[in-house]
Length: 379
Image 1 (cartoon, helix red, strand yellow):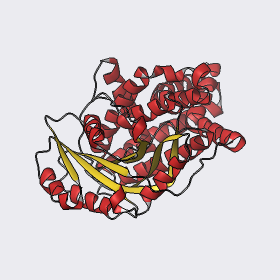
Image 2 (cartoon, one colour):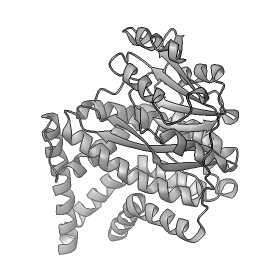
Image 3 (cartoon, rainbow, N blue to C red):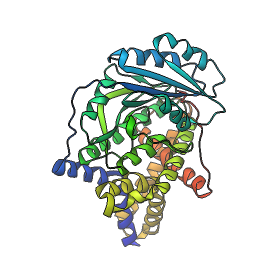
């Protein structure tokens, strides 16, 4: 049992700390810098919207105000069966060149992006959420990476703003800082595994239509890697989005994203072939597969610690520490439900939320369930 205990401890360390340290070290030793250069290619900004009357006007004005020549920016909004004033508000920007398309019946974000891509004329396609606000120079920072001919896809930095659910917002912020550190390291190694879906860009020549139930901000980057191009992270290209307001909303979003990610990994399992894709296959295994299955390690590790109660003080201390973390996660959930926050409970709460969502998503995956449509972020 002690061997199992130490094996599980090593595996958990690798998933959450060892892998980030590994790609950091590889980046330091064998870094592949992106050859950026300021350039101004024509771009098309694609926005899928479902019942976004509260945000779409501000979002479109934000895109029109970007520090980029207006004659080189095309904005296409696809209303995915919206039943509110989304269409009316978007149509009001027609004089500014905004193109409004209607998708009926509702078929999800990925299908909406497919539709928009057929109408886009820019050399670079930029994917924006209907409620995301770009920093004024974000577009320039994104496209500078495409001066490097090896780059096919670029993702930026998402900054979550606070909401009524302060604990959820804090958890999102911590999670994104951790993920962005990994993305910096992965970029130096070659390609990132996960991207920020609200501020991404791809060469239009590399865009491939996807299935409606595909997770576009995972499927498309993986296809780009499969075709031999790099997917890189640009920290200076920033957007702001509101965090979801309650633990329930955040949990549902995490389940949906995890479920679609599992299907994507299953459909593109060939990328796990280390003989063909080298280091990237290890990245995909470590950053996605093992992360989504980490809850199995956590449960087994707790069980092994429990069985070693009589084996010594160290094992009892480890069991006690795990129990305290579980209790803190539960207390954090109770605090978050009240819309309050706690500095000490945020990390265990959000860690537990993400892993519980992974359990739920895996259950749905094993039952053959898929997710196509989405609900707008309600921060």
